[in-house]
Length: 239
Image 1 (spheres, rainbow, N blue to C red):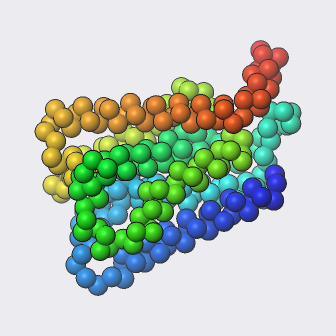
Image 2 (spheres, rainbow, N blue to C red; image 1 turned 180 degrees about the vertical axis):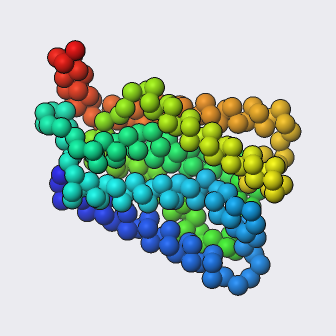
């Protein structure tokens, strides 16, 4: 593993972790009543962005640990990946990349149509614009640079889809419970849709999740096509 990749993972992890701590303390220490969006049942854990902030922090922490304590074996190296590298690769493929892309694309897509449906103007008083971009914009370049610099071996699609759908259904169950128990629709867009529209919207988002997994797989193939060919050749020899 090159020094450049180690520095990249370490610096990104530091940026994300620092922003995570700042966001938490900033919201906790503000004395005014403009933070009602973060209060009430579920607190910040109502929001997928906050979930993803934790996921991203864990992922880059895992990357740093693997860079210094694990392996970074590619199929052309003809070595065995350690358990830490396998965890890193599977976590990136099945959770980190598709959920990160989902956060960026859905947030800015809905924002472009009507920001009040996803990020009301009153939140500008709470969250600095630079922190908003760290939470909803910088995810994309971080993920693409990571995919370009580091080879990640994808699991089978069966495992990938099962893991991603399990996480999506877990979060869906959570926000529906919040709506039922506390009468809070986490995202304003769900509040304005009628029941049939909600069902169609949710199904469309689940399909979108699956497409983002395939997009990650495609990008991985585009960046690391030769390594994938080596892997397929190894599988043929072993079969």
